[in-house]
Image (cartoon, rainbow, N blue to C red; front, top):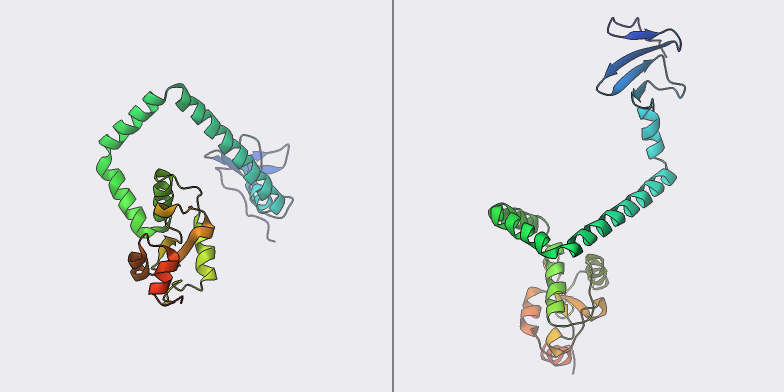
Length: 213
């Protein structure tokens, strides 16, 4: 590789290390080439090479260690947050109410945009919340819904119509009849079948649809 040309006057020559340095915004450019074969941008605080840090961050073991450190830090921050709320829950709820009233239109607009862009998380949370209110046992996630949809080959469990991206998540045994909210009590239906089924017994509804004798 061609050696860099003569450094401009804005560079400072270090006679001790034989390096040309340019300090700018907390970084310094080091010439000639780094020992690993790349031009070295270094932090002025600790002298660490940014390119070496980037390459090190691509290693799987470093990624795993970073993820674990992030999880521990997030868990600790969450514990601190819960302790703070537990000490004075009224103050926390009061601040949330004040913030909601002050930015109500902005918050509702953002929620509407998020729902239009990706309704699945909102619908999942709504189903789990309704199940808790009715005293039903269990919960489910988006991964569970995706697995059930794949098992049904993206078809309605009753009429076998292709669902594509429009489907309803139904409790096989309705919550009103003591059904649970666990994934093994869920099925994917088209809108027509789900609205017809409502809270009927699954066997009776299957007979009306001609699926059982």
